[in-house]
Image (cartoon, rainbow, N blue to C red):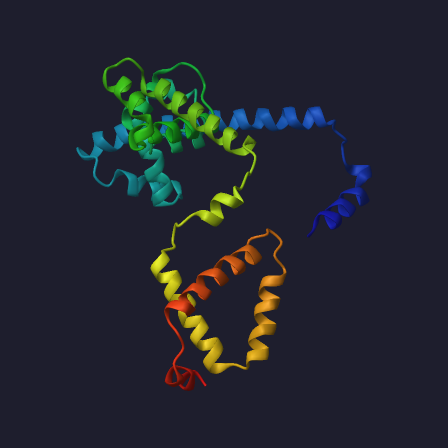
Length: 265
């Protein structure tokens, strides 16, 4: 069912539909999100109690997750994630975090995770992702070596270091976006990067050999003219005249002999 079909279905039942304002709908969604968070924390509490009960009855922890998953009718993977969360985060602290936030925190470096969890301030998924990204830069990017040193010397906490690295990255990104895309054509033309005089000279000689020995003089003239004539940036024609002087000088140094001309013909 696409959006138009859904709209038509709703409107056809408009007499039975209770109209709500946009504000009411947003408020209702937010409250439901809070209710889901509370329900998730109650899940952790019951799983915590179940773990104590399992240990008391079996004198071991092994097999707990599998039995809990089977008896509760949930997947083993989901039960394992819940188990990791309840063991990693104290229930008294878990109240400040949503399920998704706690799930993301599981893969954060321990020192960063511990600092975030120890705070009484509620933290969003986006804030955790930014902290993880910033702290990863601190640990792996040589440009942030000064921040890493501050962490090692206890001058900055992991969260403070992560924020500074994130802010620096954002500043660089904005600079790149604001920087005009200026291309120095003259510098590009004169650059010898990926180019050497010996290879270029050899290629020119090979091209001359092929043009003269394989093609008609009239065609060679026509295609050379076509390739050089459209000199939008005024480089090809000056190069032609400069190369002409070089070739004339070479002709004087290497006079044509009868056998050489015959070979080309």
